[in-house]
Image (cartoon, rainbow, N blue to C red; front, side, top):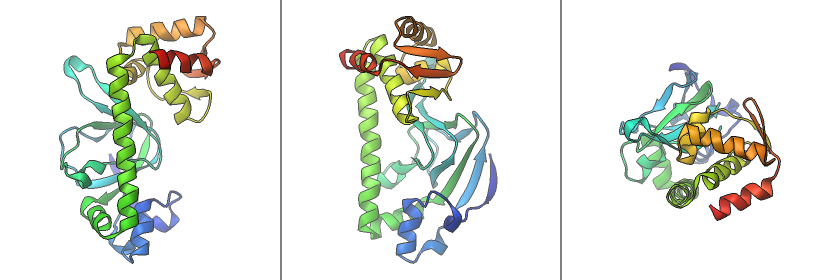
Length: 228
């Protein structure tokens, strides 16, 4: 981790809700954002550590995951630019309940959590926006828990491939996660993830070209995900 510079919100391409709200309230000079760069695989935040800043992912991809026993982790989400990290502190939890680490070189913007709380409690529109973001995050985790508890191997991998296709907005995408991490995203072992991918390839459901996955039969993937 290294601090790149004090972030310049006016020149930032993302124009996040934090900046727009603070500008509306005349508080933009109080933000004092910092840009921080992380190398691939570097930890952005750690499970059980205290939340001191709201973190916005500006560049790169990161994974949000929970550490399990015996080194078995569960990946909850793949984070893309403009995603928030650290919303829970606004809603009453002072520490992270998950880890976030960089899948690719990442740049993040850090803004003090007390400033976020000030905007949240004094601006109705921002309160609604943050509640919606938090609600969406919780709904995604609930869906993940349902999948892990009820679906079989093929259904889990099918759901993960649909998720990644939607995330990258393409039927053909380059994986920024390893086969092991695909297993962690699906709640199965690396060996089972590789086996199911091979089955899907042999059945003409997907194409595999190194790290590039091409969804050839989205309708079948959706059916497999639905029936579990």
